[in-house]
Structures are given as structure tokens and as C-alpha cells.
Amino acid sequence: MIKSEKIIRYIVYWLKKYIQKSQSNGFIIGISGGIDSSVTSFLVAMTKFPTIILEMPILEKKENYLSIKHAKFLKKKFENVHYLKKDLSTLFTSFCHIINDNDVENKKKYFLSLALANIKSRIRMLTLYYYANVKNYLVVGTGNKVEDFGVGFFTKYGDGGVDLNPIADLNKSEIRILARKLNIIDEIQKAEPTDGLWEDHRSDEDQLGATYEELEWAMEMIEKKNYTFSEKENKILKQYQILHEKNRHKMISIPKCKIPDIIKKLDKI
Image 1 (cartoon, rainbow, N blue to C red):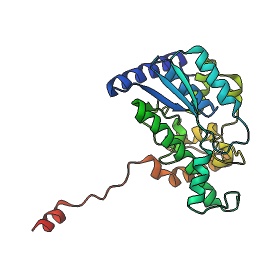
Image 2: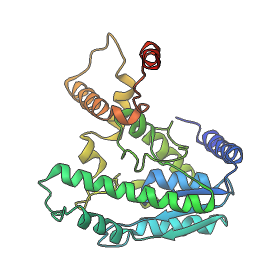
Image 3: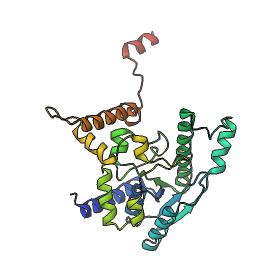
């Protein structure tokens, strides 16, 4: 069991130290009604620095009541929290029209659907950075350890495009412990994790092919030698490896072509 109080204090201290060093005026964070963004936004609010929590619906058929409840919850507890809601549906549909991909509803076209799901995430990133630039704020990420460094379950230059991430060293199970300690709304704690990018509301587990708890276990056990795994455990490990390799490009530095000095020198002769 993690020592939640110490972790909370340390993250808040780290955030304060970072923002003071960066000479920024405050923080901005996108909220989704999920447990990761709810915990992260609470921790950021605890710094007492100005904090914008931004909800960005795109073609939502109904209001995200969990985001609204969390926003009210935070605003009631913290005077430094400011809530904004910006509907980005028009921006997204305009993009679809410009590139002539009108068949957005055709779920059989997997790669088209995936590309458009990622566009939603990237439009949200653009919006966060607009306000961050105008106000000299830092964009705060909400990815957990398994997502960011295990299976790469985020959009490159979308929700992965942030200035800092205070929960990146915590697994989902640890974040759930912090959520209980912070008294995050019970419905958020019990909600099925989803990235909110798909119209069929598929869960993270549907996309990943395993639960977060299973992937956490695999991330820890992947380097184990001389250990006999059951058939189910081997299946989980294989799924983790597939996801890790597929998304490895998101988790490493951008590859650079390093030109040998001898070639550069020859070019100058």
C-alpha cells in the first residue's frame, strides 16, 4: 500500500517548485470526468496557483455530467480554480469537411476512425496551448505510468503534448488510492476508464485488450527470469509486449539522423 499522504504532499511540492522555476503564472488542464484528470486537477489546485480546468466536448450527444460535477466540486474547495467549457465540435467537423473524409460514421474504416479520434485529441491540445500561451500557463498532462511508459496509450502530439505530468510515475491502482484519499466524487472513482475519443464509447479495456491491473502486473513482471507463468499470464504478457512495441515510437525521443563527422568534413573540402 502506498503512503498516499506523502505522495500527495510531494507532488504538490514538485508542482510548486516547477512553476516557480518556469516563471509561469498558473496551470491549465483538460478534464474529462475520468479518474486521472480528476486526481491531477485536484493536486494542481492544491498548489494555490491559478488553475484553469477546461472541458472540451466534441460531438457529444449528452453533457458529461461527471466533468461538470467534478468542476463544481473543485470550485467549491479551491478559490484559485476557474472552469471553462469550450465545444470544439465545429472545429472538428470543419476539419473533416476540408479533408473530404465525410464518411466519419463508417466504423469499418478502422484507420480513418483512428485518425479522426486522434484529431480530436490534437484539437484539444491546440486549445489548451492557446490559453496557456495567452496567460503564460503550463499545460498539465494526466497520463499514468502504464499509459505513458508501458503501452503508449495516448495520442502523439495530442494528450501526450504537455509541459509536465505530475502523475506519470503512478499506476492506475495507485491513482485510485489517491482518489479515495482526496475524496474524489464516488461516481468518478467507479466509472469505467475511457479516453472519450470514440462515438461508440468504447472503454480503455476494449481498446487495450486487458485491464489496467493486468497491464501493471505485466509491466512489473516482463523482465522476470526463471519464472513460470500460467497460460493466462502468458497471454497478458504477450498483449503487453504487442502494445509496447507497437507504441514504442511514442515513448522514445524523436529519432535524429546523426551525420558522422568525416562526412561533414568531406562536404566542406
